[in-house]
Every structure is written in C-alpha cells, then in structure tokens.
Image (cartoon, rainbow, N blue to C red; front, side, top):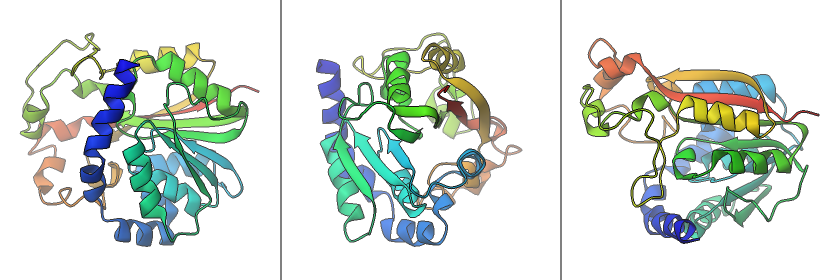
Length: 264
C-alpha cells in the first residue's frame, strides 16, 4: 500500500506538467482525421491487423497516462474504459475530453488489480510506453488483464525496449554507451517503486498468465515509430539522433511490442 501511495503521489504531482507537454488541439485534429495517428506507426499496424474494426467493441486502457490512446480508440468507435492509479492523470484526461462526443469512462484504478472491472468483459486491453516500469509483479497484472478480457480477447502492449535499461540514459542521449547496472538487475529502483524488466520477464509472465503470444515487434529510433512522435515539440529539433550513422544508439530498437490472445 505504501508503494501504491508513492506512485499515485508522484504522478499526481507531475500530471499537470506531463499533460502540458502535449498539444491536444493538434492531437484531436489529427486523430479526428485518422485515429491511428494516436499510436506509433508500428503499433497502428498491429491494431489494424489484429483488430481492424473496433466499432462497438469494449476497450480497456489501464495506466492510461496522457489519454491519447484512449481518445484514439474512441475515434475508432470503441466503448473505452480509461483507468489510472493517479487521480491527477484521470482528471487531466477527463478535462481534455470535455466537449468531445467520446464514449469513454474514466476510472481511478490500479493496473495491478482493476477491481472495479468485470470478468470476461473486454475485447481489447492496451498498454503503452511507460507502464511496466511502475509494475512490481508483471504476472499479477497480466492475470488481471486476462481476467477482464473475453475469451479470445486481445492484449496489445509496447514499452521501452529492455536493451537500453543497463545504460545511463544521459549517455545514450549523447550517442554513447555507459553501463550503469547489469541487465539482470531489475529493481526495485528509485525508492523501491520502479523496475527495469527484461524480455524474458515479459514473456514468462504473459505465458504464466495464460496468454498465447501471437507476435512481437521491435521499433527503431525513427520519429514515425515513436509514441506521440508528432505531438512532442522536441522530436524533430535534433534530426541527427535518428541517424544511426551519426548516433549509434539509433541502430538499436527503441521499443518492444507484443500481441497476445486469451485462449477461448
């Protein structure tokens, strides 16, 4: 419970700044024309392949963060439930959605439990970049995702690729590789609330939770494949960082994605 409170307080204190980094007028304009613009290109292609028609489907977005994915799913015609551990995140997302004719329900709920949601209810559960670092027990979270999915339901995720976790973030931004820890050291870090999961941790937890893994994807460091690439002001002001000839880090994938199905 203390860990839960620390995470909630962290995001409550940061939420206004977090939402302030995105241009929501532009977001709504873009996803209104093409809802797939709310996702990295690689993720949009997965959604189009595995769930080509979301009209009338029930979608859950745990740890919904900036709300962009939830809004995009609404534009696709889905009935959306957006949940987050932070009241600040939920309220900021709700405010951004005001005036939009979105079929969306906002919930203050921990992704580790999702106690407010019914079993066998959703067609799709989706988590985006930045969720897993806050989760202490991947199997517990995935079991709850499986619980709320209908039989045959789909879970799609993407997050920071684990290859980068052993490296100092500042050094990577400079195109250098400075080790800060072993790959096998997964945490907890930062006052015991964050984790650096490996690929095997994702895969083993998904399998243990009863999911069938249908596909995995690795996204490279080009703006079109990064989350919210067209809404963050700092994505294009350093074009060299996406050229692996000038920045060796760009030769490696930025994100890891996965598509899973609940058997049934």
